[in-house]
Length: 274
Image (tube, rainbow, N blue to C red; front, side, top):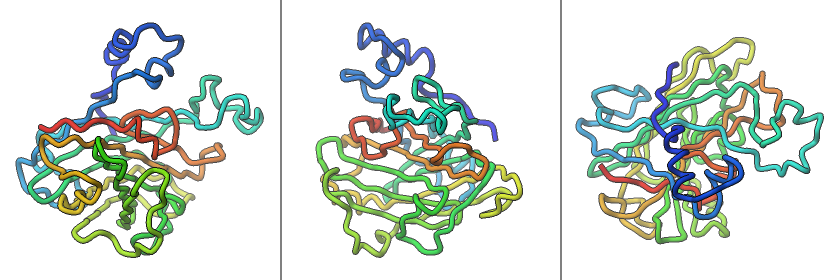
């Protein structure tokens, strides 16, 4: 799969340095206190979006395409076991071959649509039901949606075998309701994968996924999701792979974040309505 590099370019990094002044390392220039929030565009759909796992060019016309970027390590450098992380660079980024992807956003009067195209040489997911903890049972793509002026937010998951889940987070320090055993009404997820599922003896190509998230459900977080309203978003991917030497799966996000903590709301991107 070929992906367009359309955001967070070297020019953008240079602009960040200008805006934030002198900084000692690229990590600080991107993530230190005072750095501006990333922006992502959510475009109004020009055609009806059919949630079938196929990213149709006509349905997604006009949507900006964003890269998923490898996250920096959460583990402090001084506590990293030398032999375990011998293939990890000193600046905290893993040098294991990165399997990337892209994501795009659209909306209409009823739904927010999110689509992702993901490179993956070992597609796996053992979840058999919706509303599980799919991030711990295989490959997973998550969407975090938060009003800019509310502590509450939503967490949505989709998998290569078409399973989905939704969780309302009252605040970052408060757990999601473990008794929420059903997905929110109206949510849809569809996926397509190339090659096989849960078979590490071969080499896969990748998978695509589409979400439809009903707008009327989002207001529980404290704001109506509509043009002009201030919302933030993070896409978080967990990619398991038989051939990865690491002690954990690959984590990647849009926008790029300083760690694999997907609940670091300070680094969610501001939504720009188009």
